[in-house]
Length: 277
Image (cartoon, rainbow, N blue to C red; front, side, top):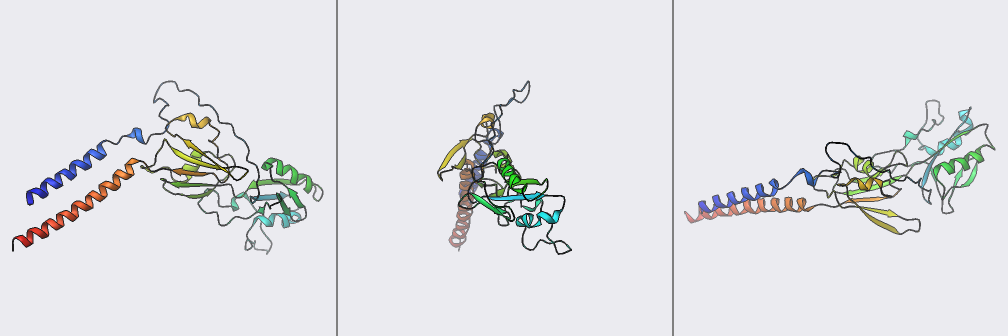
């Protein structure tokens, strides 16, 4: 029986060695088609299209004038109700008020785009913004603000430009992006990068279309070709899923085999004790 246990433990060690000795950096390396040395070719640029404002988006709208109090009622719509300065008035909002780049989208303040595609701004009234870029929306709000303020400066940003990262990453979650020009590499970096078990050559990106349908797309991080694809830059509400590779299943099997081996050893010891009585 003791000899059998020694053979079993030796076989288990051989199994572990065979599993982990087969791993290589080739399975986890990005951009494998880029040579390690020599003259490197320029990677083609992906076309960036400014995202359009949609219904239920939340916009940060800031109007700056010579007299900050004149536009305080508009700017306060970007702040939480308990954000006040020492004088009792509301502070001037900044683009840092939103929780950019962190997996927390519960505290989103700004102006909601309603079902008619408009935002209702104090003093300015209802302004149609759906289907516009933030640049075009800024111009529309600027035109409305010119009727009430002298040379106002208008800033319009997405407050809920959110992408979702799930699967084999270190920090899965929903991330509010700091700007509109965000790539899939930016999102994966914010999520802590892929784990050692994530499949680099078959990442799934699901994109929501204007009509509510969703389009899936596969991305291969092992090749630099995806950096010139139309899916390199993300849009709001994109969903990224990193599939687990065979290595995770193998690691799970090894853990189970280890548990079985330990359980078998314990049962064998118990059997030896009882047979010697």
